[in-house]
Length: 288
Image (cartoon, rainbow, N blue to C red; front, top):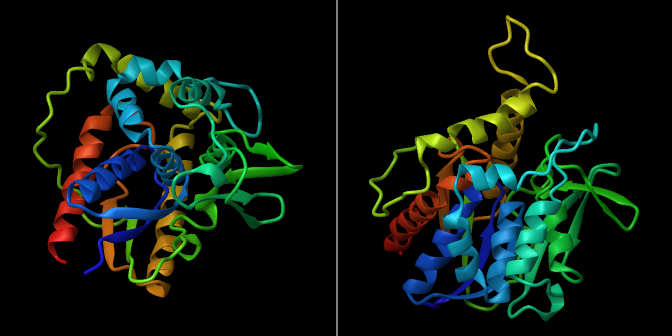
């Protein structure tokens, strides 16, 4: 059986850190990733892998605690979103310089959504970080990315699992990672000693959620809150679109993570999320 993999990485907020674990496990079992398409965090992780710098990115992500995550959030008063996203990209560019997509080691495709015209925008050339910034722009959270006169938001709005855009090679294996599964989440025992998630940082990550929720104040009858309402609505939408995509395209290997496994901004749990991605990948590869 071929060991070449065409890899599709879906959208899903912090759950997308699991894509690192998926890639790690594929490589450790001798698979060769020959192309990647990704949406949102799938575009970010896939693009960084294509630069050859995934290990450095993984180490950086696993070093973040709740305070670090809070400090990377640059709030704005814009009505189009409350996070500009410039801080995180500046930090990433300092760690991993920008590249042109066409110069990457393997074919890479990122997907964003033209929110004005209701169309997909597909990046296969140009600045990698422009593609990433456009693709991760969660509506109402990140401000839209201005690109050639367009207003671009998260690719997951229209194509959360861009199977149709990955470049295929003869006899490759189509591996798809769906982060919007409705299957039950069973927390595995961690092999990592996580020391950066202390309770003293809880107030910082809670402040992010409180800031978002307070944009539109809750009334006493509303137990969901603005942020949770939008997050749940978007997650449900992505789940349904993902289900339809998987009905149309049949991957050889489908790796699924429950949509309630980790919160949208729980990047401080990166070690745990990566482990979970490795575990789920190992399970599915055993079926081959």
